[in-house]
Length: 74
Image 1 (tube, helix red, strand yellow):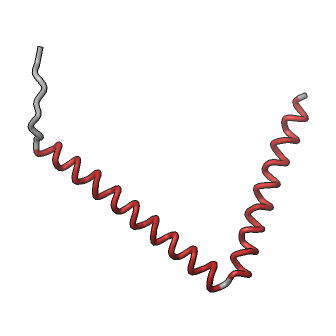
Image 2 (image 1 turned 120 degrees about the horizontal axis):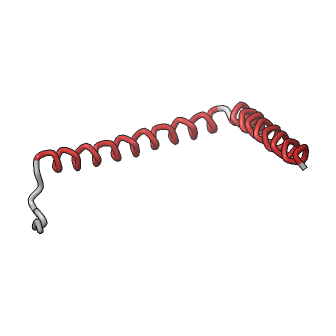
Image 3 (image 1 turned 135 degrees about the vertical axis):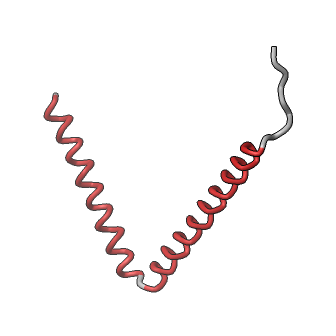
């Protein structure tokens, strides 16, 4: 049976650094997107509300189409 190696190899360290870097970048990008969305909502609330209303109308249309599909099956 082989023993467990507790030493980290160079590739293990590189993988760990890459993972931490990717997570940090994801966090930064997420915060930037959130900041831009908040800026957009604050700077033009009427446009933001109209966009959200349009998106919700599209989702309602999709849901209605799915319900109609399943009702047609029965």
